[in-house]
Image (cartoon, rainbow, N blue to C red; front, side, top):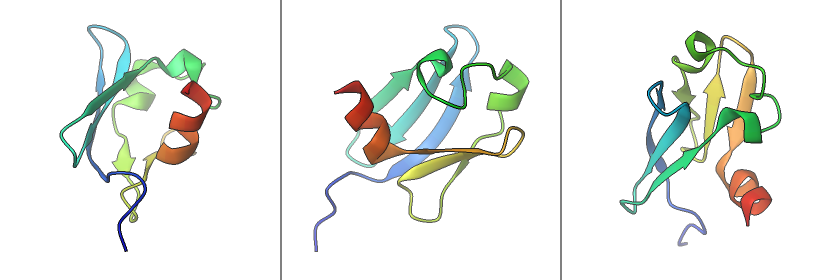
Length: 79
């Protein structure tokens, strides 16, 4: 069965532009501001820097603030 969304293969916080950067298996990078995502809007850069991929590779966990971002929901909210 083909996945509806490409897997997230890397996540990082880019302090220079204050954006979270997701690299997708399709080759498409996604960049978004933490202020635009519920649960991340008040996070400090140090809290965003240690993000981890979820086991499904469709989400990202931010352990310092115990918040998860699910890629399909993120895309739905922006589109």
